[in-house]
Amino acid sequence: MELSDALRTRRSVRAFRPDPVPRATVEALLAEAALAPSGTNVQPWKVHVVAGATRDRLVAEVLAHREANPADAAPEFPRSAKRKEPYVTRMRTLGKAMYGLIGIPKGDAAANWAQWGRNYKFFDAPVGLIFTIDKDLGPMSYLDVGLFMQSFMLAAADRGLSTCAQGAWNNYWTVTRRVLNVPDEDYIVCGLSLGYADESDPVNTLVAEREPVESFTTWHWG
Ligand SMILES: Cc1cc2nc3c(=O)[nH]c(=O)nc-3n(C[C@H](O)[C@H](O)[C@H](O)COP(=O)(O)O)c2cc1C
Image 1 (cartoon, rainbow, N blue to C red):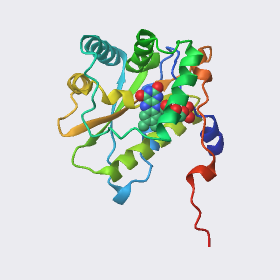
Image 2 (cartoon, protein in one colour):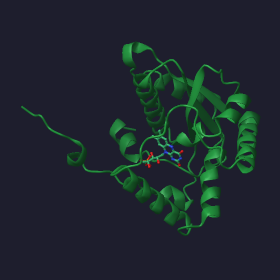
Image 3 (tube, rainbow, N blue to C red):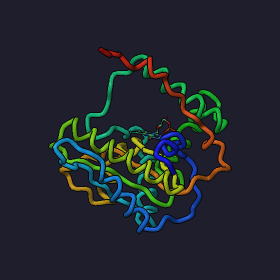
């Protein structure tokens, strides 16, 4: 696949087939993602890869915790930002499009809760990745982790695999930390589902809109 094809065709997939992904493939993707640049080459990314019984245990424990403690959704690291325009509208547009495809009526809190909960099943993907970062590192290093993740997702697309980055995994981090033995000195920053897309699921027809170049670019051109 051409790089530009991978860029244009990659989409966040939220329903996967159960077909396994070989460990060697995940290792190859990680090795390619690690070619991402990072400020002063610190390579701050750390990845916990879960599959099989560990994946199933993590999913079961997080979902059980979520049912028992519905309000316990705060991330450990300072993530929250002020809700303001134009971001709120973009977020709502995405939500509306997604819930429309799935057929969840507006205001159906129970259905919303259940659908968001699919994040914690990695949307049925056979492989999950949990990205962590040393708590002593600053915002620049978070950029590096993002670059790593994008490289990983494009490398996956190149092999016919699908992904969904999941900030959802920085909620319920106490459970993830315990199940995966994530050291106290690291934050859990993001998750990611990896597998083969279930093309028959309407949620995977979602195309998230993009703003045109002129809306976010200020030219100082000459
Ligand atoms: C850092 C990050 C966190 C995300 N977290 C979630 C998430 O928790 N759950 C989810 O369904 N999608 C999540 N997404 C996917 C975004 O909603 C998606 O990238 C965006 O809507 C653009 O759509 P596209 O990836 O299909 O182009 C996340 C994406 C990124 C980059």
